[in-house]
Image (cartoon, rainbow, N blue to C red; front, side, top):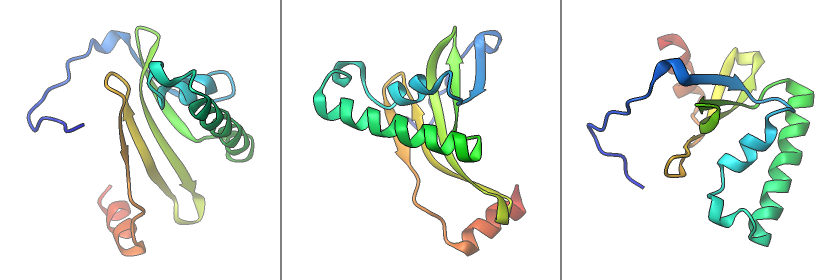
Length: 121
């Protein structure tokens, strides 16, 4: 899916909430990655189970793996990341806007690029 260059997303800020993924809302993280019509496909079910197991392990070990955006209590977006405390850095791995199940996977940055982003943030 291609995003239109000048498309503006209008949301009611009062109803928008950002939450850290934890063991209570981990199913929202798993489900937001798969379109509803594929959630019963055996291959997707296997992938969803693997993601839930991985995310549970990361949450138990590191405490954080992603942020979820909720609009009117419904998950509508996600940013998945890894923490790199030694470099005081958060690497964004995937961004999803669930309205159209649009997923953007980000390529790993070189150390030089990482340094530029840290210095400019």
